Amino acid sequence: MEGGKAEGADAALRRHPCPNFGQSMLAGVAVRVSLPNFMLIRNGAFSGDIRAGQGMQERKMIRLTVNGETHDLDLDREMPLLWALRDHIGLTGAKYSCGIAQCGACLVLVNDMAMPACVVPLSDVDGAEITTIEGVNGRVADAVMRAWIGRDVSQCGYCQPGQIIRAIDLLSHNADPSDAEIEEAMDANLCRCGAYQRIREAVRDAAIMLA
Image (cartoon, rainbow, N blue to C red; front, side, top):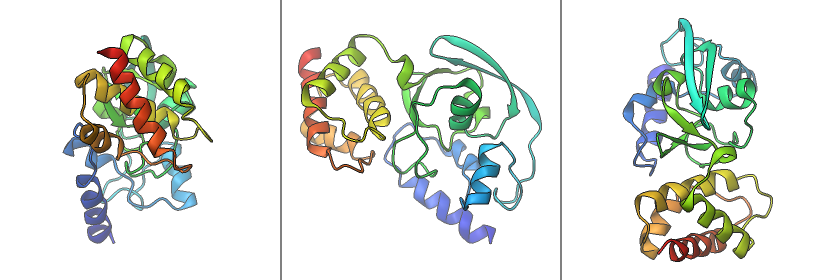
């Protein structure tokens, strides 16, 4: 199974447009997400049936600094960051959607760079500074959120934490992006309500505020 499925997952992740998504994270991808496997992933039980050729991982204390607070967690080091945030720390702003880093709903900032929490294993972020949508602050975040409200971007709201994190990441590293650069960055995030035009306009508005 595993050869074909693992190659498919790797290929999909290599196509992911997030420039900060390292190859080391490919090892943390669950190659099947049926309902039973989804529950195993969520609970940190990574069997060989789910992970390509890997069994249970040794559990060691993980230290995460999330929104300025330190958390020492006794969890499987290969558990995706998303479940540690949602189920063990209680921060539910980052959402589960695709599970393969292809939609952007789960984005968080790791050392000020946007990362897909659904596939990043805890071992890759041990000791890192993590910021979720609940903890964003500062000049760029304030501009983005004011622009979001000004353009009335949110509809159902499910994708918006990831959209805002992506916009903050973009504008933190490029305060005056071109329309093409905004399109390229935000194209990595899906919106089930189709609010793409307003999202792009809000990012442009935020950039103007930061000028």
